[in-house]
Image (tube, rainbow, N blue to C red; front, side, top):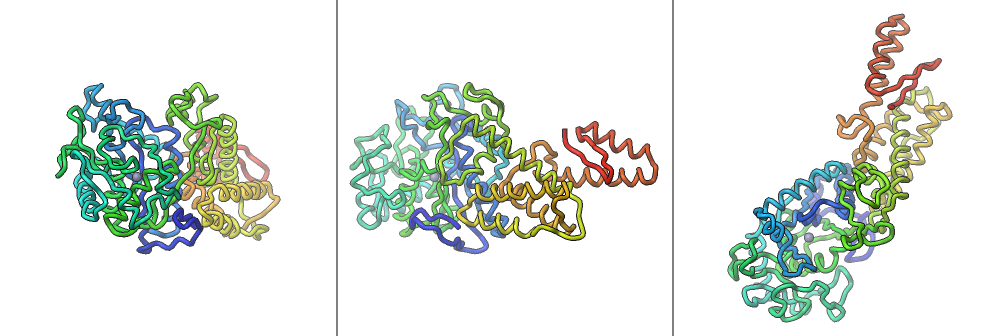
Length: 486
Ligand code: ZN
């Protein structure tokens, strides 16, 4: 069910320590507002996390916060972006990191992305990173140069293969990660920093055996995944843009220090584009999640709700590219509405003595689609097939027994709300996204029918008026009732 990038084939997922699954995903770098680029990896790995849990696994999901060490490639003076903002605004660097971490969490809540099991910060694991660097030095794959430590790619490549994940050869690798300071300290352009000596004005610094400085960006993930998931764990994830150099460097660091690979499966989500172009500040198409939710970006024709965004992302397979446009988002909004209305219809369907449908088929087809490399797009198309049947159940063209209706409602709850993690934004959220509204309204309207049968008009009118007041319109029919949320 998972795609193993290293072996380039699909294979059945067998956890190393069942039922515990260890999963590490590269999280956000917290120096700016969460944007569209954050939504796809977060939702992709939230889907995997939810699916594995629904399948009965216990999952330890570690998603880090990068708050030090990730230098901006285009920064002019090589200063960490957090440090630069802190210096300009007279803030403690951790105030900047904390502020954007909170913004990220708030946006993830809106998108109904579950919190991971552990969310370690790079700055809180400096000791672990220093210890990890020592192990690489002991293995002979690192060298010191003017207080900084670099990974010796050539030496490593004699025993292992650098480039195994992205399929690159050392000869082909011309460094595209321009080192900003200390470029001349390196033996080769493809060597990368494990520890950097801080320049005098650099405010984020820690003592180490080599210099007062800070760890290289790739180091945090090797150190923190090993600390929380052990030397071997099941799944490592992230965006495809991280495959090289970040994940390649992580593999090299871990293989050097530990003597073997640590992650069994690598899972990468593909990138997003906006109107066919890469998202970038210089292109004027850099859209934050808040701008999307409020419709306050010049490229947006309207606001798009968090569930529209989530649904849109889930409608594509995670390994396909995904293009954001107003047309595509508006189509997703309509599709989501159709799905939610179908679920509402299922909530209203009345049981019959016999079924004309095979209620097991819905669960079987969803399971089959998801087990095929997490194909949420196929799951959604199965659900749409069944939306038609749900509507036919209400209109009397199909019938289902009470037991079958119960089965269908449980299946919808599992797939739509628990695994896809969608929320009915128009309905109450008190049930954690589960549809509690339909059964409650049906219960009240059944009580109202009983009141009418008893000629208790006061009670009957009171129930209808109270429902109307909270936005639920009741329509009486010959054989019962119908209702809808206004
Ligand atoms: Zn990472």
